[in-house]
Length: 266
Image (tube, rainbow, N blue to C red):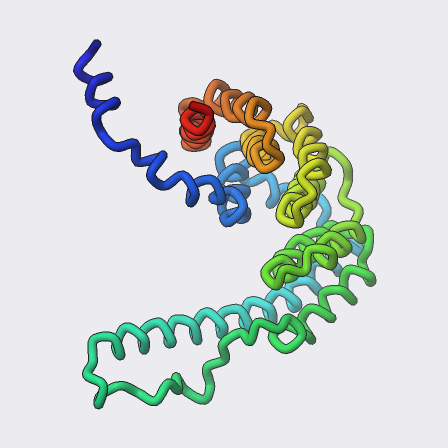
């Protein structure tokens, strides 16, 4: 046996040690993984898509959407700023004596999310929904649905998120169609409807026009099969990722997930 192989067997398996965290990685980092996949396999495609459709009514829809997004981003920046202030205050209090600790108030202008969707985003959400109804066939409405569905998901309102996605009609075969399908599949998976999610991701993984999203779709299919207790099917999906994309980070993820299943099966 080679010294390298002996070392692998003797050293703790870092992947197995953090298996529970890695197993939920795909679900917890939906946006990051899709964005990274698009950069690797479809870089610039979304910009081209928007330039192509920027005529007439679509141009008007995009102008209106810009104002919507601007308000949402400002609200989210305020939330992020408030959270950062709370975190800094907590760190400061942790290193201070009891007498020096503050009274718990960050500042009057800071606004932390309350955990109630209506209270936190009420008017913004309503305006997004009105926009989607006003421009139902536009590409901008698809982007709006993708955005607002993430907010619904953040508050565990999966039915509302799916309802929004069902109200838009991206052109089949387009990048936005693929992104909308991935979003729908992800929401069904988060809701616990893995059978429906697998069907959607299978369509993306097998579509010749969606090759840039194939690794992500296979990854989601595999996690769904695992949640259903279908370990052999899950292993098959992860092995495909390892085999087809071994020179990319997603390939290494597929290999790690394969190892986890094999270790659990022993």
